[in-house]
Length: 535
Image 1 (cartoon, rainbow, N blue to C red):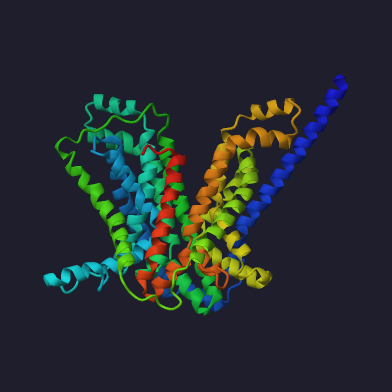
Image 2 (cartoon, helix red, strand yellow; image 1 turned 90 degrees about the vertical axis):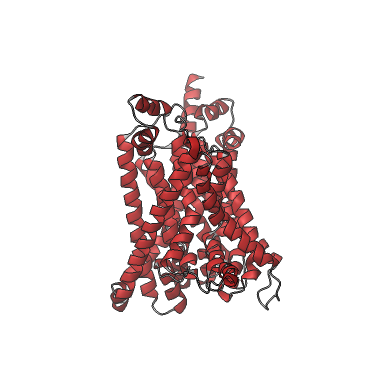
């Protein structure tokens, strides 16, 4: 009997090893697939003709590089100037209605930048709503919204919530006893905040700045609407002109180098901050009393809310009520919404299926290969959607023309782009599952798959649902890859909005833009619920 039990155990151990190797192989293949568009772009860039390399160091290209760096630096700086004070006000002070200002400070993230950009251009352009309102007062012209100032303004207003949310989360985890200790050493409230609290939340601030910087680098809609040349706008123009494909690939690679530099800088800042301070909070820091400034302090979050939420929504409502004729070819149709829902649902399911082996491998193994597979799966998130789309166009036309401009290619791009959202959510769920529960099910003669289905799967189901929801809702907003890879005649919400914006028929974009903002608001609810921000 003992010998038979030992043999049975050896057989089960062998089966377990084979299953583990199978998961490793599948996870590795998925990671390689995710990285393949970047590899292909590198191959395309290396094979570019010599005249394309000459264009890469031309004054025009260098100016685009300078413009992009200036935009990223300015947006990062202004986002910190807005996001950090808002986080401090809502977490550490006795600001009236702090819960309300917390929600309004996070809400600008639900408005896609390109919608915010052409809302602001409609409001503050030469013939916009603001200029029309001032005309009866004798004001004939206003400062232009276009150019660097408009680009930085729009990016800042709609990406500062990244800094706000990450800083807020960091503040909520600061050990309150450290602040009290600083106060006993005759530090003022502001001094304790500056010397104790802010250094500890520097990693959280840098994480928010990273997201803001990547957004500013990766978006081409805002620079295009604001008529300001950045990498993304230049890449889009070159791609549409079909002038020099090699130059487009080289520009894309130069952009990826800038992205890599941003990632390294953020890692250094975050690493240095983590090295100097240890975590382990024991409750939120003591509140700072604003005194007579308590009510006037609300003017700051109120002003930001008016600019970042009030102006775009007011313009969208104005477009909705603007009377006019529907122009041929620009009629909004129910099929546009259905197409968006269709591809988003397919992308969510595909991303979830791809995330399961990667997340399981990363959660159940601390080896170097598992860490590499996990990190490689995040590559697509750092690659701008336009660069990813162009890479897949090059690959499809060269090797698999049957997949060019088809739904499978478009969905693959979405999976590459948003797989990290699913992986992160599913992996955190696997980490919370006690492996002894699965082992207990195995002792009750449940096969491994049955034990996984009966025990593990129900426990990780909330994480699976949250990951799928995030992929679905962010796919609904994805503009760049959709513009490049959409099948002929397959129009979605975002491509319709971009089409009418390019044609100047802003009123036609009112309903789909409001629908998209509503969908984005749902994604914010998912984010807040998963990250457990104290709203």
